[in-house]
Length: 81
Image 1 (tube, rainbow, N blue to C red):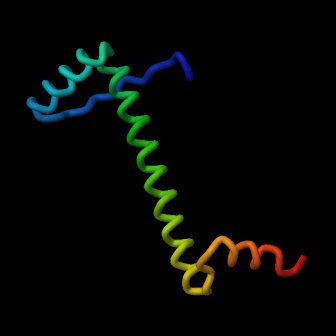
Image 2 (spheres, helix red, strand yellow):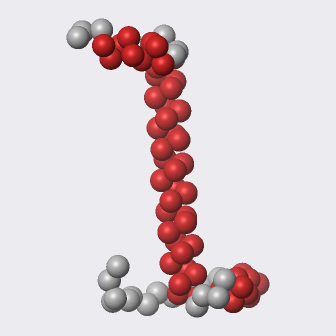
């Protein structure tokens, strides 16, 4: 991680600002640390959602081709060997 920092400004309603400050205090973090952690968690959640979306798509395509079990996958992988 770089030591350089770029300040950003974010506007939120007062009640959300109070919740954010309360959470930072409860976590014993400053607001910048909490924001970085929250951004990393959000990014991880989006990556997981994308993975599961691709997984559902792959499963749907496999079902269309009659690939329903692990044995079907193995048979397909080793059919030309």
